Length: 336
Image 1 (spheres, helix red, strand yellow):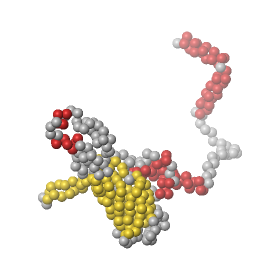
Image 2: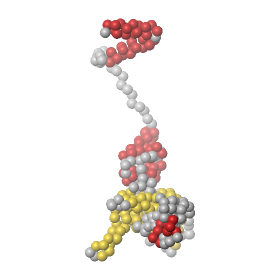
Image 3: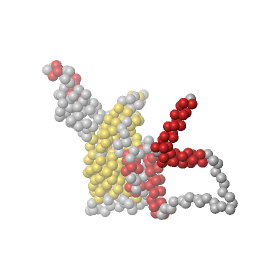
Image 4: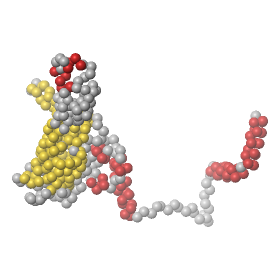
């Protein structure tokens, strides 16, 4: 043990001789660490009291902006798990947030809310108007199924669970708004008007469908837009999959095999049992939509409310019978 101690002492002396600056720094560090264990001494009455740290100074306008942005970001982050908790915010609130504050919070999958309320939007005949920034946010997904009961065949809405990530809100939709025969007519033209979505039934079956309002033509029940105004109309529902899609057996509509490769003998015989599976087609269905206005801001031209939509589900390029999907939720738009 003494030999090990002697070698350590000689090695420390050699290091101090070779690196004198390092030795001085090490000595100073040891002094600081030793002083940390000494209890703090209270200053005498005759001495000057220690100076207090000054609080940071910020302009009132900057503090207001930073506070608003921080509050909005905190509200967003508190509801990152569910989109319903992330909002709703007004258009001005969302415009004040940066991309980093919105990213990963679910706020992009929500619709804005009308800022304030009150008034009626009056549209003059002969002028061109448009509905812009139309946003549809479904909050309830159900599948309509027929069940046999004692009173007969009854259609029941079976609640489902969304398995799609938070990318199913339609937004940025715009179109013409005209006045015809004392009523308003909205014709959808462009925007993010479709979103592939999948829901799961309680039994585990998954139902894919294309949530959309393509080519929507909706008519109102009045000539002005006020609280209680309703728009009803129909729209086109394109196929969930396109012609380039190949099924697990390599069959497609415009490419791929004509039939399952493992069953070539059916080509010479009767393949009626697999006709729908082999004969792929692009199905186009029809859906219906009803919008009800519950909030109006005539000064900003903002309107919002609730909607009910019914549309067919995916047919797997014609091989399956579509199911009826019932959606309910909230919507927002501006009138220009």
